Each structure stands twice: as structure tokens, then as C-alpha cells.
Image (tube, rainbow, N blue to C red):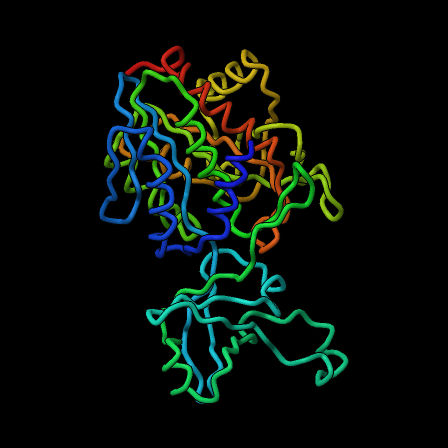
Length: 350
């Protein structure tokens, strides 16, 4: 588990928003190269690692991108306006320290807004919107900021590092979906599967499941499994009716997400995952949700249809810089994926 923790820390601390996943791609390539027969990067930027074998073929999809920001414009005063890339809750952005990944190198900034001391009483009660925020990099003018590398199109990530809460519980940014990448990588290292496996680090999931669409079309696997995170409902402010998933109780198998607008998992896929978990005495949870979806939604609709499912990591505080998960759950998730790869031939035909 120590190696798995180290891998999660490395991936969480690395940076790569949607459309700028190159750094993450290289880290995943380094981890997988000794465990697959070939690795390539397709025209959209998806990393495709192939372990050759027999059919049915299995596609594992874990998205590499994290939510972030992008420079929209630099004001004459040197302050930077930005747009959100992916689904942020605006309140989590205020007063965060950020990194602008410019061609001149990393540039540190802070997200600011009008201070409460200068707000009218009613104004102070309202939520500050991202549109009213700005980034301060210490520049005194637009020219000064541009010399530092702040120009439109520069990707921005949160400046936050991985930390341990307890021996089992950790926190960091971008566990969505670096945890899914760890699940996929660890499963490839552990499995003795005979089937052909396509381990795909997908791009631009957070902005439309884009990489999953193109990579699945090119690979046309017999069955697919997305490895991602899901919302744990075991903390104050959220009720069981909103999410019955709990940290510490094992992998989450998606039955349906986004109230059916996402994936409604085919019965053979559910049977495959549930029976494999039971046979290997891996505790698991079943997830039915009305919000959020994964790469599996795009994959299942590729060509004439691909049987697809999602195996998720229970996580708290999703889409924030302080996501929390259990390393024990992460280990169980990787184990279930590894064992499922070995049993896929029992449930699906080429």
C-alpha cells in the first residue's frame, strides 16, 4: 500500500487541466511501460497502453485531466481575469493560491476579490462569483504581467499538495481522477488476465467526456470499465438520500448515474463485477445517483454500443482542492479491477 500511496501523491501533486494533460500522460506512461506490450498517444492526446492477449478485449478508462482555470485577459492594472475549466463551486476558489503554467515557467498567483471590510452589509451576505474574482501575480501593469508569462490561454491549477490525515486517510487536489489512474495502473500490475487489455488515460473528461469518445471509437473493445471517483455521503451536510456511499466500505459499482441520462449499467456488467467481488471477498457498494457521470457514458454509445460500467472510489469534497479518500478503499478498488480482468471471459464473448 505504501507504493500505491506514493503513486497517488505523485499524480495528485502533478498538474494537468483539461486539454493540457501532457505532464500526467508522461507519468502514467512511466508507470505502465513495464507492464504492457505497447504504448502510444493518439491524435487527441489519449494515452493508450495495450497488453496483448485473447478476446474478449477490455478497455479500462481513467481520465487524466483535472478541473482548473485559464487566463482570459490581463487588465491594464496587471490583475488577471480567468474562466473556469470544468465544474467548480465558486466559493471553493476564493483566496486560493494558484499556479499559472506559462511558457516562461510556473507563475504563482492568488485569487482575490473585494475584501469584506469594504463591502456593504447586504453585499457581504452574497456569495462571491468567479466572475468577480481575479488573480494577483504581483504585477504592477499589464505589460509587467505579460513579461512574467501571463497571457490569454495560459492554464491554471490550484497550488495545493498531498497530505496525510491518518495512516489510512489522505487529502489532496485532483483525486478526481488521479485515484482512478492509480486504480487502473495498479490493476495492470497485479492482474494475470489473458484477455487483451487497453489501459487508456483519457483526456478532457471534465469538459465533455471527449477523450473517451474518440479512443473507444478507435479501439472498439468488447467491454469497457471506467475507473473514477464517486461522492461519499458520510459527512455533515449531506444525507443518505443524496448518497448512501461511505468511505471505508469498499469500491462503488455504479448501477445508474445522472438519473439515467448518464449510464444505466447493463445487467451482464453488473453481474461480472458483483460476482467477482463476492468470489474474492472484496466488500463493495452499489451506487445509484441523479448527478454526475463518467467516461463509461461516452464509451457505451460508441459505434453499435459497447457494454460498459464504472467502478468508483468513494471520496469526500469532490471538485475541491481538499478531496479526501481512504487508501484501504483505493487498494480494494485496484484489486477488484485486477480480478475482474481475469474473469471477463466468463461473462462476455468476443
